[in-house]
Image 1 (cartoon, rainbow, N blue to C red):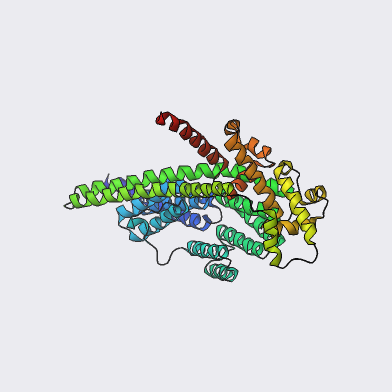
Image 2: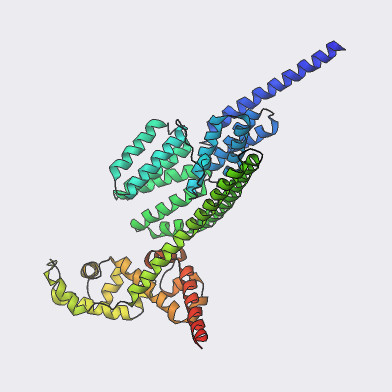
Length: 472
């Protein structure tokens, strides 16, 4: 009987050892795949969570799962798995993996622009994973490009290449190619920019990260617009609309999950501290942290809205300012150097014709172009472009877009019917064939989206109606 029992225990030990070995092999495989095939790495980690009984392996499986979701842009699920990994690490007393999990959580929160005032979420790893080191360098390169420091951007990109083998990491390679395209775009090498954006898009499609795909399609749309390839521009604009809905939902879900998980995390800490001798003091600290956290969340949500409203009010103020006198403006600008290609009389005539053009509605025609307007004004495109650039201080597209936006905002303010129209109708009414282009241009000029502007006008009308009633 003892012999049989011995063999049963021995067999069970071999089964457990074999299962543990299988789990370890699966984890190694998932770690190699996560940056190139995150979907497969996620599948392996999920399988490992079902079969493994080792707490350390379960902790690693949750981390790989969180990392896979992070690469695919599913930030809500990434946060859930990362918090599970952090909890397991805390239970095991494993500070290294706890910090790794916190690092991943912090990166996700930074992407969502949720900066939480809690030291556990801002811990840094001295030697983080090469892919994350490369990601940080790519962010520095992107910031340099925004500041028109192309040399610095290229330096950081090369630094990233020295940190990681791009052939081994599809995700890092996609980020690198996107930045490379940005550099070419800055240098006006549009064909090279498009080629790099397309290469990055192929990788992004395999990884299936909608945020990365949205960014790339936006860049491709801008590049094709600069190349005057309208069909390609419209194609990517349509893709942007679909991706916009998807990314908006994902970001919303992730923000809700972040609030819930962070609150739960803080609640768990509160319960642990409740049983300790520092209960009273720590209760006050946690309540303060929660209050600051809530305040920061509301601040983040309202900051952009306040900024947009300020921009809109500035726009409305500019509209009320009187137009400068045409003759006076011309006389004042006589001292400025003029092109010998156009006579003063011709310029004055073009300006006078433009004033009539602005008073009409022809700029709302969808097919309005520089050539068409030049023909209507009995001049050539070169003269017309030169006068608009010098006198209106903008290029032709900006000039026409501003006329269209000013026209539709005036309609919205003066005609109550326009407050009930859809954005697509408003776009068509003022000459835009694309709903998304209209929204983008409207926001760049007015400072807020068309929907927010309509809501603002509605609120103003309600306030004006209520004021006489209050006075009575």
